[in-house]
Length: 408
Image 1 (cartoon, helix red, strand yellow):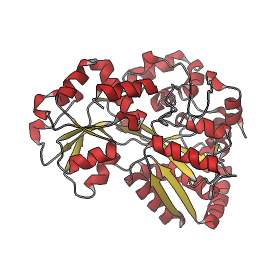
Image 2 (cartoon, helix red, strand yellow; image 1 turned 90 degrees about the vertical axis):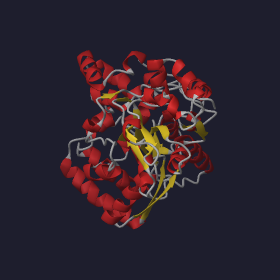
Image 3 (spheres, one colour; image 1 turned 180 degrees about the vertical axis):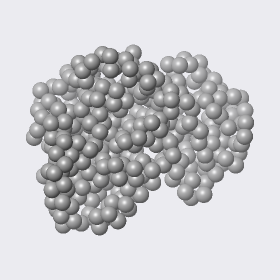
């Protein structure tokens, strides 16, 4: 294995392993909630030394619930230009990349199919898989789960030696399941995958730490039922959720289903304090076990507003004619989606998986993957809101506390 695994074996950036899905890392809290433009300027002035920590930042998450710690946020990596040295060293060889792509297409075509485990809403793997099949004639099937149960399923299958998934897409971050999977030989670092889009230098290095690349950034929004909420009543900001007119009409998702929800609520807690949640609970919101049930409830008229939601979740119900729309507050954070590859010696379709990864990471495929309003791909981060702030890694204790603050 290459430099990525060697870094893990040497305990890169003080990763301290107490078993699968546990991590103990310090992270610079003072950088988390700065507007993007200010953050980029400040990090640029700090010089290259910070690039090392940008690759390795993480915070602990709960092993008991299957939550994983989130890797350094995308925009920190973007601001520093941080990337895994092995990935950088291999980049910039278009001739080699063209030859490798031709060989990869041939090998992938012989396998004929690929299986995706995805935490992204159904619309994303569905349209991406369809476009990939149309381009290469290779069947792409997917199973959609939230990140926590997805990681649990993947690890259970890996322990049993079945490896049903060839490629995995997770929300919010991929540490520590990716790093633990690499150490166990279940997952290949992206720097060892020899993807043409990386060796050519085409994929932006700032989104690639050499382990699992970021392929999407999706800001959090407020969803509302457009049959019930119109004109001046449409909320514009998160604080609008506290208006007494929403009593009994707000829908919430259980933050324990994925750390990304707690990342969002922590942003509001830091801005407004615990009083925000006291007022929110007083409005008697309807509580759901996850984001998909909540958006389905909104579409069915079980409530009027649902915060927070990402664009792809809304697209899934809007395509079916549901009266649901969104507004994106200027001040918000978001969800990052990561890609990981099952190890070549374990995957049933390793070449098809690498071709699909190459497609998703290419300008063409990344546009398809992110072809929804409100989503930013790695080639178009200007679509992010002006006051977008970095999502902050969370611990299991924070997740459990947030569930209590929301009344779960």
